[in-house]
Length: 309
Length: 309
Image (tube, rainbow over all chains, first blue to last red; front, side, top):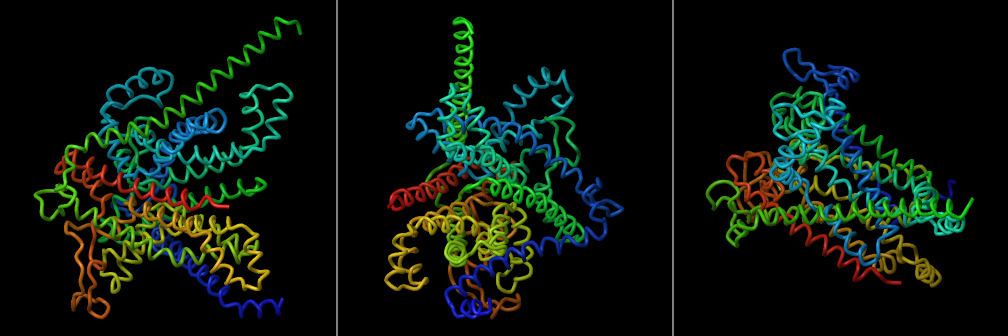
């Protein structure tokens, strides 16, 4: 071992590249450090659990709690995923299994171009174009039909169209390309021996997909879904225009809420004069960062379990 | 099983398959047509406003808000290029380390995980940390809200993209030409410099161009670091005492605030009573066209020069 280290230290290019990698690691560590350093006063004054589950923000007793924002982000992400996963998975299956190469050559770039649209543009599209038609035609329809089954679907009386549903619809369009491209790759990489064995025992194409291809591709698909979830959790500019920005747990799919990212964006300028608000906002950023890290670690863990990735 | 029962069951399976093929095709077509719908509406609504005057004139020479986006276009291009130029050296070095020198130990796992963490961090978190680090702490270097602060923050944002693409292309260099070089007596660094890098160059350039596109459409980071201005970027060196700047000089435009297109689009939401909606869509159209041109350039480079071997 000692001989190896001496030899390594003489290898100048290796040292150079290693030190630049260490520098990048240092940058990322500084990023994490700044988040938690700035957040520390808020955690100290409210307690870590007190901050995560607290429901007041500011006010006379200077207590801050991120719970309503966590709930807002959670509902928006959940509804988005409920819409994005079926849409993305079915599209990926079609592109990977059934589409004629020429059709695929047109559809796939079209879907990938969706990623190139900036989030602010999605925001103004949702706000100025999609909100009114949804509010006038679609929301009452759902409210009157599914709303009778469960209050989750009822539209609040004075809704102006903004809310969890509008934000989720736009967010679905934003994350679906991610799911499609990763899931399609996963499905295409299923070895043809598996498919041929299934056909050999008499299964139809769809049955093969259902019972063989999808289960084998599942780790890759799950990784894609997890990555799409991280994108949805961290989205800011489109959500701040569409979710309504009211600090409350949404009472229904059409009600307004407040996402963690939007709160940070909106209140940061205010925090210049009130350091305790800055600390609270950074604490919320810290919570968001931890949630994201869990999902990223999850995606890596799923990919690791899959051999040959 | 009698003949009739067999035929019935087979028909049922065939029909099920046809239904699902239809379903998957529908979702694929639906997703692809979303692109056409969104782009079409935005372009149509904004078209009336786009004139050479609108595109070329900076906002300070026009009455009111968002009547000219020359400043934003110039700012976006300068900012995107600057941030990628800052990011390239470090990212390339890390990519070289990861593809050529790294072994499968815990250190490499940590490095890859941290790069994944950075890639998945919400841009608003990078924005507020960038604010603390570049705008406040490093004020003597950056003069507060400025192009250089935004460029550094955006460089951190695009680093994972450039690292990943560069690493992928370096990994694709075929082993046999490298081995031939080793057989002729080259050192590892010579192989990298003269064989791997030239071969992987198209892929690396693709990654760089993708990074430029990513930086151009980013808004949450820019809001907290680069500010906004209505003026075109001007160039020069100014001697400015009393503001705590390094050497009491100010290099313009780098240490001044800069306008960007995503922020100009956000203005149509933020100042919705002062900016006509068509202007917002026009700004969005220009931004989309620029980003799409950048992405198409990346695809063109990768397709024309990358498909070797």
